[in-house]
Image (cartoon, rainbow, N blue to C red; front, side, top):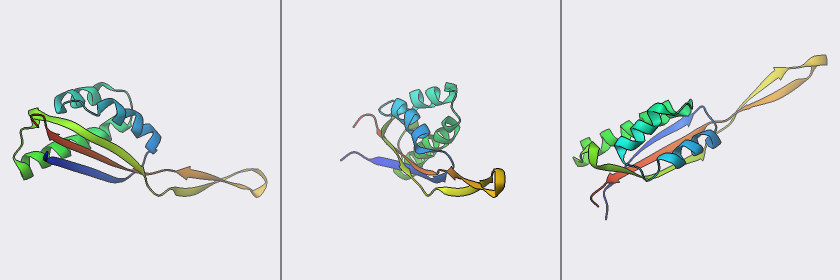
Length: 114
């Protein structure tokens, strides 16, 4: 069985839909390729995902003794977290609900040789 190591970020204050479009682009890529892609992409969620990918690589180095240059991003997925509900005051005493979504991001890496 392949040695897979993961990193999870919970309650990230961005929508799962915005994160998913980035995760789809780095899934299956090598660690170095993923870091390079995330550093040049223009999306706000890229900096968050870059931290998670770096954390997964660091977990692989510390716990399993794997080389970061030989890692590939094997699995990435995002789950919907709780939604923060806020109200915005509107005309004539009304209030409109503002939904602020959160998500849980998981990045799993494994050794490329396996």
